[in-house]
Length: 238
Image (cartoon, rainbow, N blue to C red; front, side):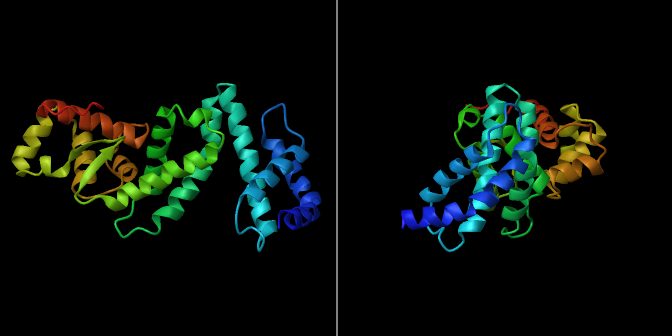
C-alpha cells in the first residue's frame, strides 16, 4: 500500500510544490526550498492511517502544518517568541471556536480560551522545543475545553489556581466589605462580580466594567490574588 500511496502522492507533487512556493513567502529567512516541505509532508502522510481516500486534501493540510511547524521552530531557535505566538494566534482562535461549539451552554468565550492557552504555552518549557509545536498548541486548547466541560461547580480557574465562587457567596453587605478591605476599586468589584456570579466571559466583563488594558486573564488573576490575600488564602502554585 505504501508503494501505491507514494505513486499517488507523486502525482500531486507539482500542485504541492506550487502551494509550498506560496507558503514559504511568509517564512523567516533562510526559506526552505518547496521540495523540502513536500518531502516533509510525505513523511507525515505515510505515517498516518486512512489517508488513501482523501489523499489530496490530507496532503494539502499537512503541507500547511509542516510549513507552520518549521516556521515556528526557526522562530523559537532565534528566540523570537513574540513572532511565533503572533503566527499561532489565528490557529488558537480557530481551534477554540470550533472545539467550544460542542459544549453545553454556557460555553467559554473563544478569546478567553486563546488567552489561557497563550499563558500556558508561554510557561511551558516543552513547547519551545517540541518537534510539532502546532500539535502541542492544539492539545493545550483542547485540554482547556475538556477542563471547562468537567467543571462541577462555579469556579474561576486560572493556570491551575482558583478561588471558588462558594467562598465569596455571602450577604451583599459582607461581600462589599470584603472586597473593599481587599482594596478593590469599583471597576475591579464589577469585573469580579460579573465573572463569578453572572458567569460573564472574562474579556466581556473587562470591557463592560471599563477594565484596564491588558490580557483579561492577567487582570482577573491580579484581582483574585488581592481578594485571596485579604482572606488569608494562598493561591501560589504548589
